[in-house]
Length: 374
Image 1: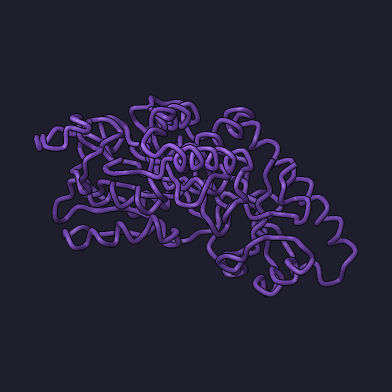
Image 2 (image 1 turned 90 degrees about the vertical axis):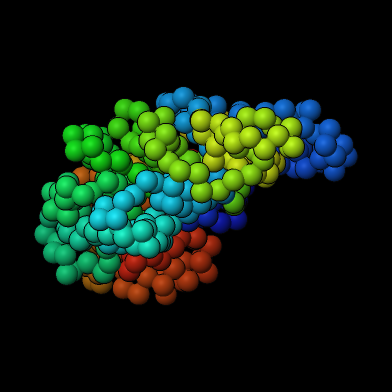
């Protein structure tokens, strides 16, 4: 049993998850050895980052050379956005309601004469139960289609930067379809996977994804301040280096050798001293959650919980006169995620009331979000 569930009904894994207990123990073990042994701890953990990259590569079904350990989604996106060889007049496409980590790094590119084109909101890809809804009847952001993306793509579009799962409505984009679209037009697809990594299938080599950035403290249940960056070999070779330090160089601890000889693989983005105890913990989380249970297994389990909740909500709706104000936002199976957003009156107030009953969820973008886990 998840320890927090002994005292709380915790439904906020799309926000900040409770740290996996075995990850806490892994961090404590590293820190204890560090406190006792100093630099000798590196002998016990000779390749902590490499082992993390290996587990992350297994999760994404790619080569570990394509992985980097970062602190959060924003750091990964900034490394990509600032390093991309944009020319004045180039364009980026993104969604109008993206999370800030996948918005501001692209906004900054206007300093280089790059334009950001935003996909507008549209009510689409809903389940049959939601077909009667109209966009103006919903309290917040909803979704978009491949046609909506195409409407803002031009001959100058170089990157489409999109979240796999929207943090408000829970809408999941079809990355395989979008990857094919980008491949046909020689556009780089960059994905914010903070709301999907570990809970939805995400295979960049199969989906023609150029880069992925994600945090580790949501569906992976890792420590705060941990994240992963994926870059394909071809895409990585395009990027300029925007951060530098001793650790990105092949000469390692030969610190008086100032030759510019950086790694060509994902290590080039691990430019300086990393929080190794947190990296050890994040590897533990990947091994014990999505790798042990499979991502598809995690997804299936959570979807089963969602279906049960939706059915009970329908039964409740038949007995309560005010229940018409309470509706789940349900997308079709190809666009469902592990976030179930609910339309309720005054979600902030209801969130507080639920907390008083020891139920933890979050209000975002006008919705009340429920996100259970294994």
